[in-house]
Image (tube, rainbow, N blue to C red):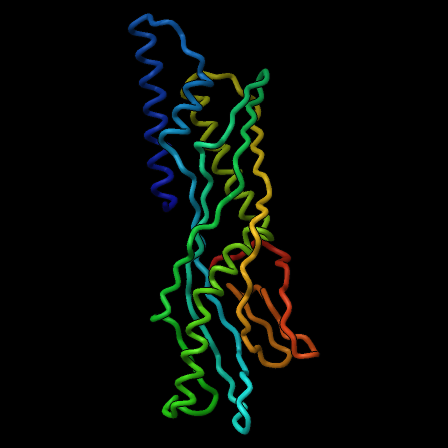
Length: 238
């Protein structure tokens, strides 16, 4: 769901809440617990989703005796996340509304590999061995995107804050439409304990790092092994 769709869903919920208040005012019907209305609206009509576009690039130096090839790999992808509001709990204590959600879930990422660029430092990929090197790197795009989806889910605090802000804004609109006097909304999103899928070996060139939107997520160590790099800042847009 894009941000525009999220806004559309929120608008529909607010209209429903306003219609509910108008119905009570005109019919003189007994008041219904507004918290129950919020829970019903939230659980039956809304899912919070967030998409992040990334561009991954790195230099790969696979071991090929007597050739020493170097391949620059660049490809775009889209990481998708969501919170299931049907499992979110609401509690009103005085003028403070507490919302406790399930952990953020990472969906299957989208990797349009046909749009990637594979550039060699030497030949134009006319030899069978060269073509195989390119194919080997192309096959890593999807498993690498799955790794990055959970990698940022576990390490990027900016992702959690984005969901927290969106849910707070959503609930603020509902409480306003229902006339619930709330001064503060506390959103609790538990950390995800999903295991990060293994990162495919990228055969990074000596001293180089693999980057997503300019932020390194893996680097080659002096002993030739590859290690992950925890992000020091939220994932920036491409």
